[in-house]
Image 1 (cartoon, chains in turn yellow, green):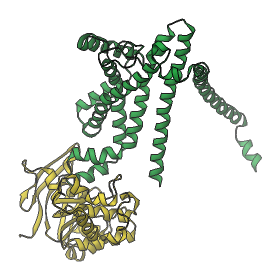
Image 2 (tube, rainbow over the protein chains, first blue to last red; image 1 turned 90 degrees about the horizontal axis):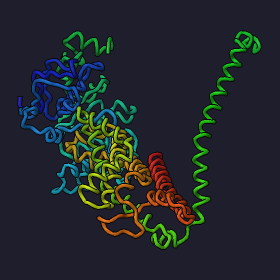
Image 3 (tube, helix red, strand yellow; image 1 turned 90 degrees about the vertical axis):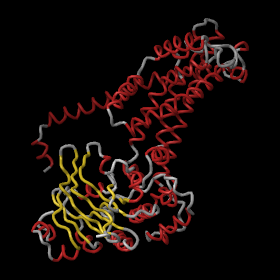
Image 4 (tube, each protein chain N blue to C red; image 1 turned 30 degrees about the vertical axis):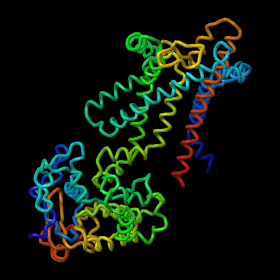
Length: 253
Length: 288
């Protein structure tokens, strides 16, 4: 089982008194795309935010259980959440480039503002990250333009480049295409498949087709519980749980 | 067809409602006139009476030569000192309230801050007088004046800072957090630059407001006929000069007061118009 990158162990999470996650045990495999699907409010976003310790930032958030990254509990009191977030990057639902920064500075921001750029050639990192995010050819002549001046789909790839620039081990994506049109979404999907060569990817989506296209493993969540988890092919072709089947066939959701 | 519809409606109540509508509009309009007429008449009066006083000698000469040079210099010094003390403290207070202010202490600070925003300025003046002029320094001093004005500036700047920082979308904070950027770094390099426009506008308006305050400086810098004499000597300032001269009954002193009033209004107006232009530029940048 040494190809497990991240793992949740008996994970429970609350917002105030409302329980958002119930006993989640889920493994995220190295260099693979794991999709988390489920109807709105099922806890999939909450789950992904426990993986880089963003969940605890909500004022009333609580949790129990463990999240292991390379078999180390990231909720161990001696662990600095800031360091975890450098190893586990995140891309959000809406593209959120820093509004006051140029395209170049947006990609360089993670390195510059964490002081990690001293032994690196920023120009190379920016170019390499934008190339990996398949955005370089579109913006290479406009690197000085504001990060918010490009289209939504380009902005989202810019945000992916910004995450990649820090060389994280895991990239979390929280419905990365839900604010984008189909063409821009298709580009992001192709990019996600590319990314798994170098990174471990976990993606939250409520687009089932997207999950079947990009992911190797799929987890189905419902009302805060993990209902079914397995290879994407198995989940979509022969779901074992009746709830999964109903959701996939569109009976609810 | 049309007449039928009108027959069904109660024509009388329709006319009454239309009439009420008109009355309300006229009421609003007359209130605006009531508010604006005194303002314009003050402006007109100040220009009419102040303009004849203004010449180079008046603007640059010291008090013994019938000039308000010391008062203009004093006001500039006061604005500078007050800004240097008050703006950093005000902005950092605003940062605390906006970025760390989810605890009960922040709620307290916010309420106290709101009370201070409307604090009577004469009490601020007396406090600075007893604490600094009598207690700390033992003399009238520009520093005491700046301290009193800072006390008035800080709550306004803190409030506008908090409001402008809250306008920065949370997604920017989350994005920075997810990159493993520390909180202080996020605030300095991402949040504050994003709110730059609002910060500049709010701060300049606050400075323009305190530039015209009289009570806090009346008891702290006392007034003087001479240019800046050092940090432990009395100093002049425009609002103070206007007040002191208006107490004198000579024609010259009265004219000088009007001239000083015109200069003060021009300074405040310049700050306000500057703010307008600055925020206009910001708007254009966003829409482009």
